[in-house]
Amino acid sequence: MKRFAVCALALTVLSFAARPVFSHCEIPCGIYDDQMRISLIEEHIATIEKSMKDIVELSKASPVNYNQIVRWTMNKDTHADELQHIVSQYFLTQRVKPTPPQDGPKYDAYIEQVKLLHEMLVAAMKCKQTTDLQNVEKLRSLTSAFAAAYFGPGEPERKR
Image (cartoon, rainbow, N blue to C red; front, side):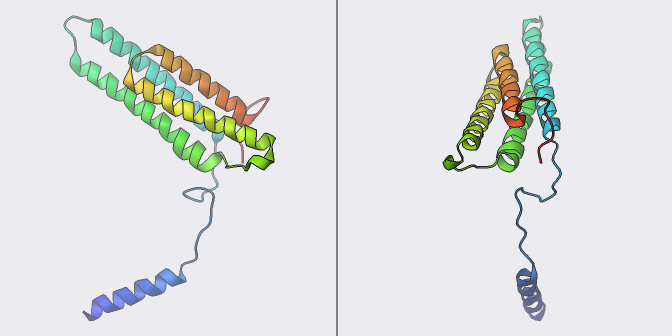
């Protein structure tokens, strides 16, 4: 019982001694590579596309190799999930900053970026649901539009 009381007291003291950390992201590392994340998204899109094409081809074979179809389907879904993770955890949570409506053009840019990111999430979901390559093209187009809206005109550079 004494040991429990000592541990409880120690935890209480430590919890009051710890200083709060205020940061803009989940881990205050300060390391960002926005262009790399766009490149990763593009790589996930290419992998989703290859997976869809292979699923369609394998479905036409006789006999059908269901094991390979399942593997390519899981691969497609995993890459769509990873893409959604980058969009939500990296861009929406950490990089695109909420802007008040009174900030005019900055607010308009914020709304455009959030709209494009949301459309990317939905397009990735549709890629998981089908093998329709139009969803891949939409995702590619949305990624390009988001990069232009996020980085602005000219060569994309790292935002800090």
